Length: 288
Image (tube, rainbow, N blue to C red; front, side, top):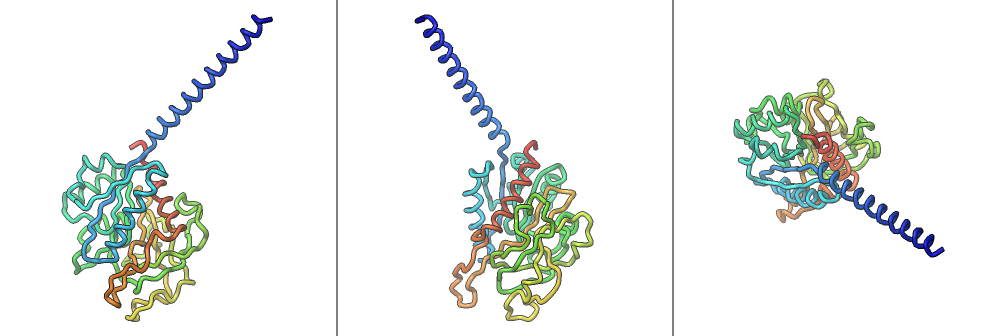
């Protein structure tokens, strides 16, 4: 009888050891898998002159840094555009332009090659801006006409105001979790030279809903929109990219206090949109 009890106890100990080893193996396997699926994000920015854009850049850096560990990616940022080299970009799966674009021909060529060989990109607000004549002229046809597809900046609303945004494609991974319409953070909204609806390479994901009109407060009449179709988030089917028109916080210029009056990342639905875009692009490039 004692022998049977001893055998039973030995078997139980054996099974416990097996279970512990299996659990340990699963845990290590899970950690290994997480390590291999983590992607790296690098954001470029300039953050000069316009306080509204500077405010957004600092806010974005705080927000992306905060959510990185929660969503299995690493985030870093730089205002040194000389880092835009082939070697540097090859170590990152997603590139973000927070407020401007590269200006030197060699930097532009590196970015173009990065995108054409499977890299991923998110551009916010002023990253799509181009106007001739201005400090940022339209002198990069591939980027503005082919890649983003919008051509030159045409106009904007003023002051920064919230808009009701409408989902144009509810099955896309970026928008499928979003309500059909939602209220954005206050923003300066852009209009564009080209009609993106006529470009077969462009997939419009969100636009300004007609319930937003009149949009803007002026004081100039052309800064208030009363009708029209205005896309605000879209992707180019030929690249792993998303352009997001949001990125201009409201600043108290009128009373000359320069106080920050609104923030882009104080909006849970809008945050989900941006996170969806980043994760969609990061997972598409995990093997890169």
